[in-house]
Image (cartoon, rainbow, N blue to C red; front, side, top):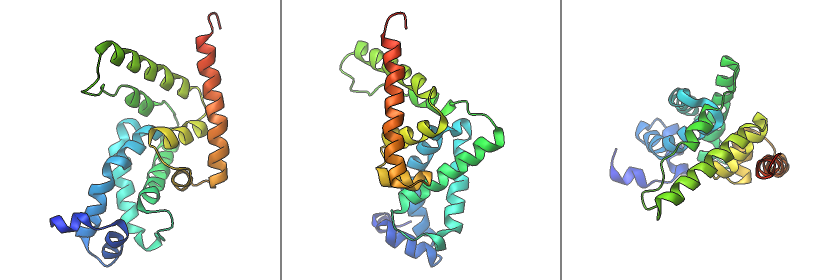
Length: 190
């Protein structure tokens, strides 16, 4: 892959890939494998995230003719990742939250000012993830997309296959439920 090829925009890469340019698709793979993997992990694929991403990338390549470009390649690919993750959940019939544990176990930033602050931040993150696990899967999915993957409402809607209004209302309700869980933890004896 030439260096100039990595500087092409998504629309150009998709157009070239549709025409059979595998190098152009490699640009998209290189650009979006990490976000796709992160999405798979955070949506619950756990140890199977690599397989989910690989399958999603293969499906995306096979379905390039269906890609319309309305919301961008990233949300379109993440929608495929989300579908593959849901397929994984259905096939194993368990929702064990491995991905959320993986997200909570991330290492502290190397420039953390104080080790004590890092420990407290890690503990708060662990508590937040534990409370997030108490929510139903639909609430978890929308909060993961919006706040852990930092997707916009429109991108979240595309990734989860929902209308934008549903994402907006579900996010609001899920945050309210999460706040209730967190408040219950703060109240002594509750």
